[in-house]
Amino acid sequence: MKIRPKIGVVSCSGECCGLGTLSRVATRLVLEDLRNDQTVTICLPLFLTGEIQEHGFAKEYPTIAVDGCGKLCAKKAITTYSKEPAASVDVEALLKEWEVESPKNRRVLDANNVKTARRLAELLAEKVDKIQEAP
Amino acid sequence: MKKPILILPCSGIGKSFGSIARDATFRVCDELRPGKADTLCLSLLVMGDDEARNKVASSKCITIDGCPLACSRNNVERSGGRIAVEFRVMDLLRENRGLKPREVTFLDEDGEKLSRVLADKVAAKVDELMEEPE
Image (cartoon, rainbow over all chains, first blue to last red; front, side, top):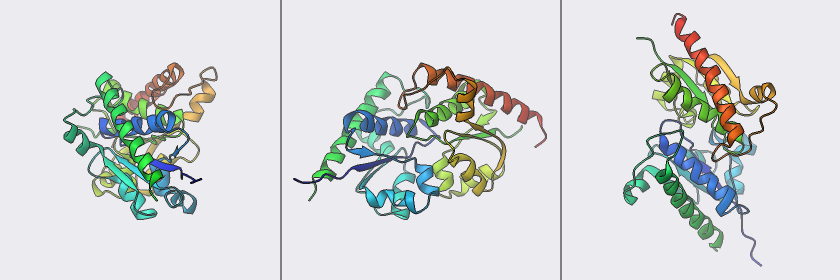
């Protein structure tokens, strides 16, 4: 029987705009709902300022970086302090590709934004499966 | 015109406390004190972004932390920021023992209540700090 590794999903949670909220909500939906037993997370600021234990997170678990914007803080942080993430998503670029509007409100997501968060969460869940199934 | 007060929440993702810190920050910046309060991405600051560091170094900062690891306070300090006031969601919980927030993704009723209480406190501090000389 193949042991499937847990996957670390790390969201930027950027406070500058609604894209950070979208990244965060989608990440939580994966953790709580879609792939509850197969995923773990860490607060990005803690990972960034942490020491061996925190930086070991991305060495212990293959990770998916979920970034709200093109500054890619989560991806860069994981690459700098641990190793290249197994997958990454730039939500701003993805929404352009999907031709979906970014959230206007960064505190409360409206019904359409929540739908987008769920779509994003499903994409992340697919990435989780793909990483787990990789030889 | 005076510079807005910078509010930096930890936005911790593991428990509801980080969500409350984040939610209260947006209430203050976008609803209660727009123009007088502002925020920026904590992760961007920690990554050493020059613009973020300059903003923090030249502003009065309010930090809001969800857990004792105090990522917001520690990172603002390390970035050379002036912390005028620090809030801890844990203190707020002690003052409001009847409230038990549980949800992280979308705040539940108790989480919303705590966010409102916190936002009012932070907004009052923003007013005080705006009155003080730069």
